[in-house]
Amino acid sequence: MAGACKVIGAALSVLGIALVLTFVIVIGRDADYRRAEMASARNAGNVMYEAEFKGAQVRRAFELVGVLAGILLAINGGTLLSLGVVAGRVNRR
Image (cartoon, rainbow, N blue to C red; front, top):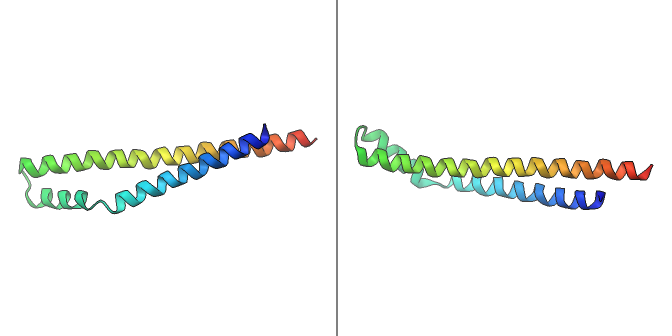
C-alpha cells in the first residue's frame, strides 16, 4: 500500500508541475492578450476593442485556472507521496 501511494503521489506531483509549467509558458507567450490590452487602452470607449479585450481576459482566466489546477494537483500528489512515506515507516515497526 505504501509503495502504491508513493508511486501515485509522485506521478500526480510530476503531472501537476508539468501542467503549471505548460500554462505559465502559454500565458507568457500570449501576444494576443497584450495586443488586445494595448488596443483597448489606446481606443478607450470603442466597443469593438473592449469586447476583444474582454474575450482575451476570459481566455487568460481559463489559463490561470489551469495554473491553479496544476498547483492543487501537485499539492495532492505531494500529500499522497508523504502519506506513502509515513505508511512505509509504520509498517517497518
